[in-house]
Length: 488
Image (cartoon, one colour):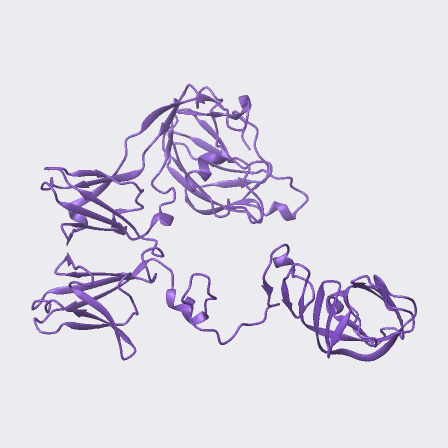
């Protein structure tokens, strides 16, 4: 062991001793290894575990141990386990800095915090790192100034000006860059760097048209996203080259609604009157020898008129892929829809498939049906009175199932719809905190010849399906129902 001033290295443990926590001098009443027995006791001093853990016992011979627990008023549990002989005196100090045997650096404690368990690095113990330069490399520390400047978000800012044929510079109220601006003059999208530059001047951002001034009484529109570069922007762009007379294009990504699109033909921004978004046809695919219905996604762009040969169609989905979710993707549940029959499941992914009518009017929803879509939209259009929908068991705390959504629309043809939660979950009830309920629950609508909608969202911490919104009269029961044809 060696020590310099108040810096001690011992058994792969390096500790910089901080300020005095308790100025009382105490004496070992027995040899110390994994415990410190002492007199006088801790009367008048807080010895709550939370207070003393990670404090330092500094002996008069220079040895240092850190406190791992409080056994009683005259015994502290400590580490490392080297021997300090009977009769040595000590005081309790705060920790300033330590380096453990895995080369982790800890400020204010000699051991890693629970959030850093098993990881290498620096634990600041909720302290601050100050006066670092702005990051220039991918692995540099990011400053608050830099993070605030990103303002990662969606395309959400529009500014308009009117040309006078003379002015080439227009000052914006929002700081932007070349990477997050979409500039159009008279509806024609301008080419960055060639038609205009983005400049920072006198604390403001401005657009400088370097080629020529926008013509008199011509609208200038600058649309921006708060993301600062293309990779950070959630917007999705698709480009097509038209065949002669082509009026229909199939998008690779689903569209939430047509008003979230910015569509141009040869640089001219199109009005929403000129196009519409249609659903893809329902496909019938064969999986494991069974027919499965897929499709009905809003991914068909159709123009009111056919386009010229070679026309460049640019589709910019301003809402981004994260906003697609399942709103426009639905599965029609009619009498002949093929659905998984999990009661005959040979393995987790080996289902038999039967029609809804032949499955006791019951639809077993699998976890994959929800997770693969990021959510699920069901359209109940059966002709029999009662339709039962069984949701799968979803994950618990910190699960990626958090915020998954299931939406059910009931047509006038289906009289009653019952939606069961799995026994490991709860339906609109925080039953995980109440031993009176062991999971399950049902939400149901019994309104013949009336349409209804319910939108459920999953809260993983409570393992609960919550009702986000709905139309019609929906009831909640804490007990999963028996089926078929048994009411709650």
